[in-house]
Image 1 (cartoon, helix red, strand yellow):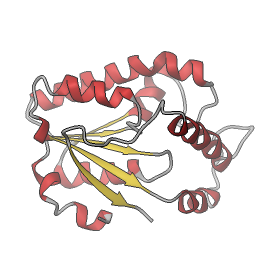
Image 2 (cartoon, helix red, strand yellow):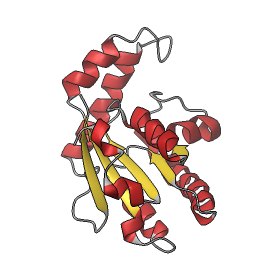
Image 3 (cartoon, rainbow, N blue to C red):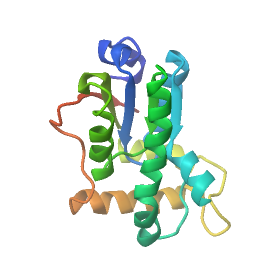
Image 4 (tube, rainbow, N blue to C red):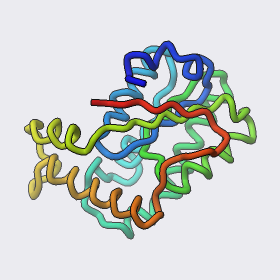
Amino acid sequence: MNSKDLLDHQNLQSARLVMMCGLPGSGKSTLAGYIADSFQAELISSDRIRAKIFTSSHYANHGDNFYLGIKSKLYSVLFDEAQKYLKSGKKVVIDATNLDKQRDVLIERFSVFLQKNDILIIIVNTPKTVIADRLRRLKKSSSSEETYFEAWQRVYAYFEMHLADGLYYWPNNIGIKMLKVQNG
């Protein structure tokens, strides 16, 4: 399915909670914003939470220990914000990579007050070459030491490594509705 057909899809229309899932640079945030705007949903971004609470930029170079140390706190804040909106009757879009066990923990926590068929995971699949071409054209820098493209390469390699070693994994047969979007 492409992103243009997504808004008309029954599963997206009926979902109360939409969780984005995909690798860095895949277009999750752009698509999440589009979905949130189209459905007047609340958009909760892991990048914004990380920047606000942990003063960490999108592709900051803090290393594994830093991110592993903040991950459970980050997802706790993400859950609390989403829960507040969901309990008030609003639709919520969560913009995060959602490629590790924290995704499954979130689903279990949301399942306490949502039906599993109210939750939709959108898997954004974008070829690495397409992402690389897009990010090479960006003129901004992530820091004084590296370009945005170089920072993305570093972070993407981290995710590839953890997908290969099983620490990160794509959702599959978890009892939640899923849509796959081909981006690019």
